[in-house]
Image 1 (cartoon, rainbow, N blue to C red):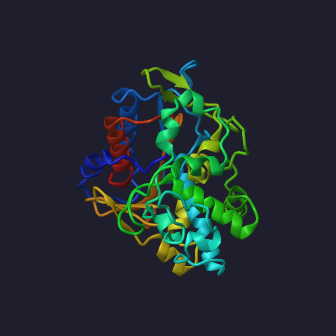
Image 2: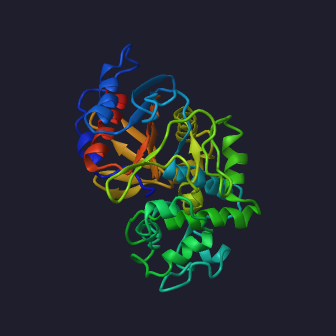
Length: 363
């Protein structure tokens, strides 16, 4: 549901072998890769924003009218929400409100103590790093059917109740496994420490200071997308493609509820990765990675990937009903953000996204 870029992109990401150039005057390889997403991989529409200004589009943002994805289209960014949430938690650590080695139980006693899950053994770092062992709530939600879940209203406790019906995936700190549940807990931790909703803290600490005018956290039961936007499509269980533009995001909470644009995402990641949102100690924590499979590294709410052309990029993917997004930057000034108006992607489609990232970072 709300995941990092699929491991299937590994093959595509390893195809880049030419040295990274400065800023090339033309980008035919980028446009070709974006076109492949719609023409070869049968996705409705795609947009890639390169270095904040160059925008490449292909296909249709609206299958009914045939209009392309608008240049400044808003989109649901799914798990990229996690990077915003992790940044707020790290800011709270910088303020002395908690440490990353604090346990969940110190701040939220008893919240996740069930069926062998124990908040007194799980640290804040492990929540953000996906090494907590907390079981996933997403699979059971999906099992209820996409069309049933899309309009459902869920509290954070509802989501935790689903997850905590299961035993831990592993002992805290012993393995890596993606956990949306961990970020639901991280959102509740922000609320406990600040007295404000997690979305209010994201807005106050990140969205407003950076001037991210088209980035927002939907209020409960706000089903629409603001501003110009494409339609978001979901492949249903029977193979039909359905319009999922309207969506209740309470099922995703702090793991994946936010809305943004490719321009805003580029600005956010560029500012974060280059050290302007966190003090040095917390920035070091952000970018200290553990292996997460297939050559990927995961820090605190952020992925890292080394490409053969000598580029290391930092970013995150988001996949949520109707949308796939990815935003990544390098410390040498290259930036790319992708919007695809369909979820979820097949391995071949994910590889196509990887090829587009290659084209952006290894021209």
